[in-house]
Picture (cartoon, rainbow, N blue to C red):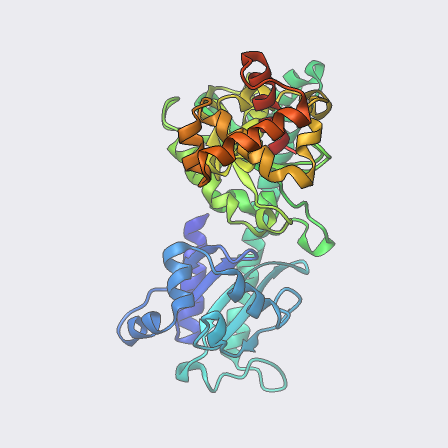
Length: 405
């Protein structure tokens, strides 16, 4: 289907006599027209187009500039002026790609001298524009069909991951039939958390998980609501691997998904986790639990992320399995108060350094005597004895668990 998009973009380029670029609603690159001759010079003069083609995505500033002109609501072509502050040095002509009233993407052209005289709207719409919009509508129909197919796979994946044990076999059989031979190969589950759910009718079926799956190189995607402590949602991505010991495809997919606005729209930074690889679908619910745990760990300890594998999160494999009320030990709670943030960090770094005062003081950038003073304050607040191994273990694990929120 990707080849069909390229052919249709080439049709628009030929119709309008200028190279066109097709992006999905989330500004992810799908296809672009060939550049040649003087067009290469224009490519270098316009960093937005260069970035879109090389990195397959536009920046948040560029998105905000274009969206401010109502492209998500437009049903007809429109001109957008340049904005050097956002890196948009040349104006654009935007052809909205719609199907049955829903926007699925945009076709972009540089608004240069080649297109300066192009009449975009009535009463004197250029017939070339009419033809280009007809082609854009065909693109919209393809994107809509792709989104529907992706949505069905996503629903089956969600059913498997969230079903009660008694219903899992039915969900697994349905997903196996839909995936075909891919269901038997090496697979990994990626979790991206937190994930913003679709929040308007216009967004339904567009750059939600279904449309995102097609351009992220994954077998299936679904949003899983209420799967995080506090009721937040996460994204589940089923990724085909070359081999059980080769997670590169999962890491690449996780990195792409983390750049989605649904991963960056919330107040906190999203992180991704990768569950242990599996052959077949039988153990996917367990792999999903591992992926979620790894995502939470990556969010809590930024040095683990932004993408963490289950096998690499150490004590968080245990801590993420504990309910929040069980992980927050009462004797440590006074130390977790906002007024004692510095003391808590001091204690955690000291314990991370295996109780070696010199290393801890250097890591904190403080004098060793300052370290000892702070540790004595920690003992006073908690009643714990930092010379006692069990007390140190309790404090260390509770401080780590507190990061998970």
